[in-house]
Image (spheres, rainbow, N blue to C red):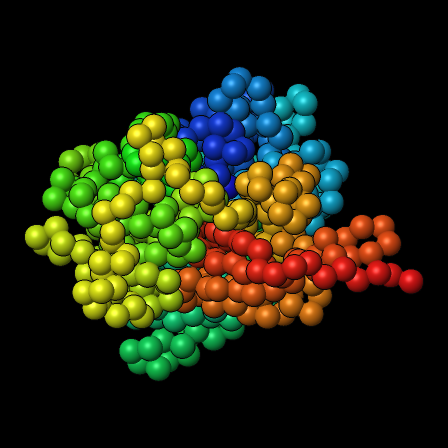
Length: 522
């Protein structure tokens, strides 16, 4: 699949990075913080640098709504990667979506090239050729690449720029929710909270003209927009000839996997923990999970961990204070799913336990706990808080022996991580128990759609439940038939699963429900 990322550059001659999305690591090997503040030319090939400078100049000078350039970008390992850069000029910045390409003749490049305002190809000798919808006449080239640069001696743009704003919109919600907006004037902030529905396309750059309803005056403002579709995190990138707005921050979250030992050691941590707690995953791997907990809550969290392991809870929620790398504490909702020999957890930064999203998770989990200021535990959610229930749930009888091994045989379960941003919910990780339980290869299932393994009559129901999980933040419980297909027959395996959702992916933990049912094809 085509890999891509988003970047924002300033409009100075050096084109310095102001923002880089995390997917740059997949494309070029760099962490975003390694590039911020650096010139974009640092990653360019020396033979193409001058030509890219001329193209950057003409994008700024002509305030291009969309242009495409194919060039080579330097990977952190030293080799070069062929990339398509789609540039949108937006008032005082350039918003870019960068795509890896096999060659300038690939279909996706041709689709982008055919729909952009201008398309540039840098020749082996460093010269520039115009392709796409514009002709390659000498007069056109002269007009585009005039030697008159748009900056003064202080690297400030000479001409007054046309007001524009940019929105990043969540491509994975049906409501097209706005997650970021540039800001020029604050008076239209309320508009940004509106979700918008526009026609969806895949690889072309679309130009739209429509009326924007201004909420404070009810005035209809005719605007023009272009949008592109990167694969990860962003639904559409909009540039409007109108006033910009503000930054809307989504709930920060990440995924962790702990072992089932009393220490709950980290086995896996998704990269988004950096946004929530400031750590890189490699700083915590192998450490006990309690290293991040507040001393006053540690004993209570130990009891809850013991209960989750002992009772093999499919889902439980507890808010606790996690230590940030800078020393302060962040309130985190942890949703724990017990999965045979590990605990799969989705973690959410929350403002307080009274927040709506915490209450939605608490109401949909099997068990929900709150740790009181004195360190005691209170059961919340849909479970009663009777003394007998508390004694049963939080028994001092630990599930481990003296060697920290589990004393009972655990119910077989498997876990899947799913790409929440693809319609097909492609599998990106599977635990090894999936082979023993449902005959699915742990290796060869990667990239397959989840729906390839679900009985056809259950697909629509699963889709509905997962959409609710993605949009509402609930923990969903599914009951479905898992389809194990052979050459001449199909075995339907009844399973029960719980699903929770983060920006890093959907987490699904499943267990068997009843004996298998086999359908024979005639």
